[in-house]
Image (tube, rainbow, N blue to C red; front, side, top):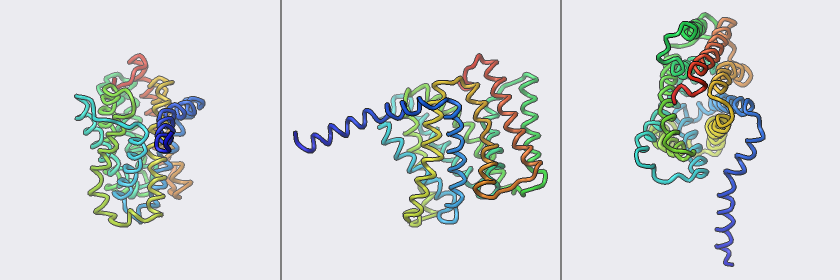
Amino acid sequence: MPATAVGSEWGGAIDRTAPALVTRALGRVPAPGLVFGGILGLQGGAALSVGLFPLVGPAGVVLLRLCFAAAVLVGFWRPGRPRPGTGRTVLAAGALLAAHHLCYYQAIGRIPLGAATTVEFLGPFAVALAGSRRLPELAWALLAAAGVLALGAGGAPLGPAGVGFAALAGGCWAGYILVSARLARQVGDGSGLALAVAWAALLSLPYGLFQAGQRLLEPRTLLLGAAVALLSSVLPYSLNLEALRRIPPRVFGVLTSLEPAVGALLGVLLLGQHLSPAQYAGIAAVAAASAGAAGAVAGRSGGRSVVD
């Protein structure tokens, strides 16, 4: 058999077995561990990206993260042309993803990671409570509002620009949740996500090149950018997808409410970003409100996702 044929056959076998091997490995991890691992990856990647800001700026970090993530996801899922009727959904998801990343990284470049993540987390929280008129669910909203007010009660200064970018990031993330839910119904595997991330990378190209230019090609920058992409995009997307196959959305929502607290903890441990006791209490209030709202809304909807 010619060497090229052997290589093609071997490569084809790897391509066919790679998703199965990854799925099998993830299947051995308890579902809560998958969710918590995704949160650690997401917030750890955000903390790591702060070290890239002096080199390429927030827009450069976004470009590197999305380009590396797109390369991994496209290489893994090998998406073809979008199915009829899915093209607009892919474009919308990618646009919201690019806008979210740009706003979020602008935020964590200005205010502590825990505070930025807490304000951003209000976007998914709003999606969960959209249209609610029940008193217990509205009480969770009031608790979250009190938590956000506590973030501004002394301690680390939170500039209006940083808070504004975090709020915009939350709005974009809320929109992405709704659009990606539609994409998940239209496309049964991860190929739709791969196309959306690739489109987001293309949209971020002019901003990243304008801010960073040739510095994007420095070896240290590329290495850190690849690490940020794996931690912040590839790892959490893969872990969350597997977790959602095994646990109901209600449980998933409760577990992900730990994200603001994890962001605050990693901000202290990795970046030395200390907050005041009142600000930590505000983060805890938002996390508790998110967990309570996720449980209340999912219970009212019979365990289904709020965007189904």
